[in-house]
Image (cartoon, rainbow, N blue to C red; front, side, top):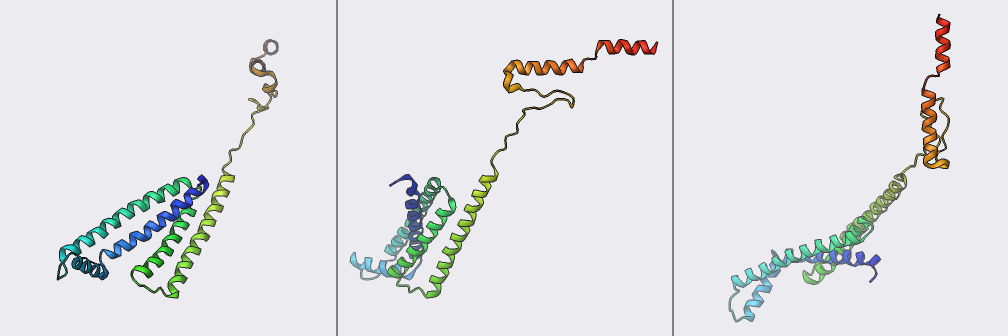
Length: 201
C-alpha cells in the first residue's frame, strides 16, 4: 500500500470502529442482550436466567465499547497525520460510519431503515463533500496569497540628493565607496565657509 493511499485505509477503518462502538454501546442496554444472556445461562446448565451472567455479558459489551472507541480515535488520528486534507478524512470516516451502521443495524438488531433515513444520510454526506471542497479552495487561495514579496534595495538613496549606489557590481568595495560619498556630501565645504565669513566682514 502506497503512502498516498494509507490515509484512506485508516479513515475507513476508523469509521468502521465508530460503527462497532455504537453497536456495543447499544448492546450494553438493549433487551437483546438479556435474551443472549439467557441462552448462555442455559448453555451452562442453569434452569433460570442468571443475573450474574447477564451482568457479565453487559460488562463485556461495555468494555468492547470503550476499546473500539479508543481504537477509532487512534486510527482517525493516524489518518489525519497521513492525509493532506483533514476534511477528506472526516468525509470518508463519516460515510463509512453511516454505511456500516446501517448494515450492522439490519443484521444484528433486525432494523429496517426507512427511505427517509437513507435520504438524510445522503444529504449529510453530500453536505460534507461540498464543505470539503470549499475548504480546500480556501486553502489553495490562502497559500497563493501568502507568498512572500521580496523588496529590492537596489538603488536605495539615504538622502534625496545622494547618488544611486550600485553595490551589486562593486561588492564590498562598492558599498564602501557609496558610504564615503555620503560622508563627503554631509561634510561642509571649507571654501564656502570662508567665503561666507568674508561677506559678513
